[in-house]
Image (cartoon, rainbow, N blue to C red):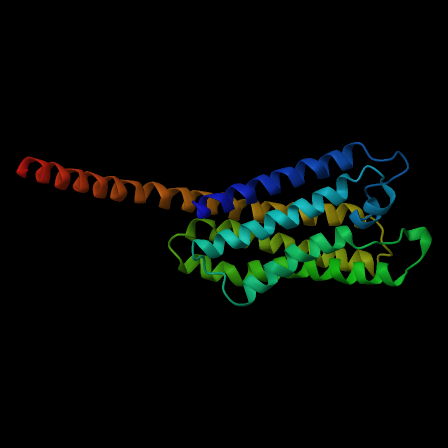
Length: 229
């Protein structure tokens, strides 16, 4: 039963986070520029709170995904598990940690927020890069090995683009690059969540005939005893 709850929580968390993020981007304050402002800036400047909600819910969904993968004994032990945990907690911490807007300067909280965000952005692609080979060697997860590989490559390119735009690029178009990068990350999580749900529910249905057979055998034994009486 627990194995079937985790994929539901993961899928629901990812879908809710996407919906909240879309709401935050479609109906922001009129002076916000999504092309040049990062999600951190949106979290500070947009008073609707949709961006923070999206980050917290996505972090929670990622934790449920990791717990579910552990429950079905997916090949995530070691560094992939730790890196996925860093990604999940970094999302929640970045949403809760107060950050300063660009016009307010860089406070200590803003610096901590920035490092937490960087750690989260780096950790998930690193985890997926290690999992590609493990998925390819595991019959249950082989179906997602290639999609995860391509999405990991795309996220690596996006991470490199964000690094360039943040340093020599002076932040020009970094908002667009960050949103494309996060879209790829959400796609990776979605692929894993769907596969987790498929495996968890398949295992549940496979065990049902065995349970039914045991019940039937017990019923036959009871009938035989009653006849003997």
